[in-house]
Image 1 (cartoon, rainbow, N blue to C red):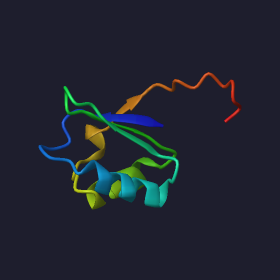
Image 2 (image 1 turned 90 degrees about the vertical axis):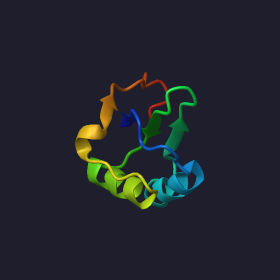
Image 3 (image 1 turned 30 degrees about the vertical axis):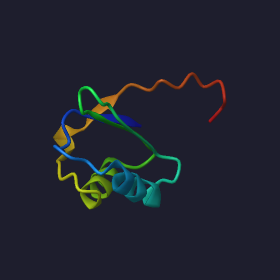
Amino acid sequence: MEVRIERPGLRVDSRDLEVQLKDIDPPAILDLEPVSGALRVSTAMTTLELLHALRAGGISIGPKALIHLPSVCCGGCSG
């Protein structure tokens, strides 16, 4: 799943957050948009696992703050 968090907080330590995410889902991808400050996460975690990892990384939000994005997978790699 891929999710977007519009404004996760004023200062996000993306390195610490990435460690928290990868502890649960090693191939997870984290991207912080420099202009908007939005955070994008691509992961196989459940919503609850993601919220737990985000909280451990310093972002305390509820499930309504997660914007679930449609899949961009074309299926070409069978992954």
